[in-house]
Every structure is written in structure tokens, then in C-alpha cells.
Length: 96
Image (cartoon, rainbow, N blue to C red; front, side):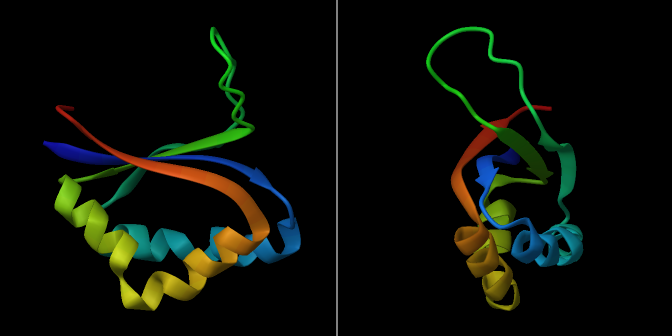
């Protein structure tokens, strides 16, 4: 089954976040991932969830997605995301 990382985030410091935006795609590609949804503003249809922006990244499987998250070379970029955004991240499996 494929692994999907789903990120819900709001940007606090765009100038800092821009470095993450510019450099993280190479790490996603390195781990066989691809953007399915890239930083779009969602339309809330029901419930109390109010994400500002959403990203969905597809990986060949859940373990490869975890490998991406644990890539030592990508850690400085994840630190930038943590500093420049308020974010929530989940990992789910899917059949597509």
C-alpha cells in the first residue's frame, strides 16, 4: 500500500519557509515521493477542522515515507518548517 503524508500548516515566516519550499522537493523525489496536493487552501465542508494550507505527498509505501521523515540530510529543512510554520503531520496508508 502507498504511504501518504498529510500536512496541515500555517506560515509564520514566509522568508524562512521559502528555503524549505525550494529545497524539500529534491528529498521527496530522492525517496520516490511525489506531491498529490501542494500547499492549497482547502474548503471546509463540515466539522471544526480549519486548516490554512494542505499538502499531500505520496510515497511507494509507509516505510519509505518514514525514511523520508528520518533522512538525516533533510533534518535541517524540517527544522526550518517547524520554526517557520505551525504544522500538523500525519501518515496514512492508501490503495491508490
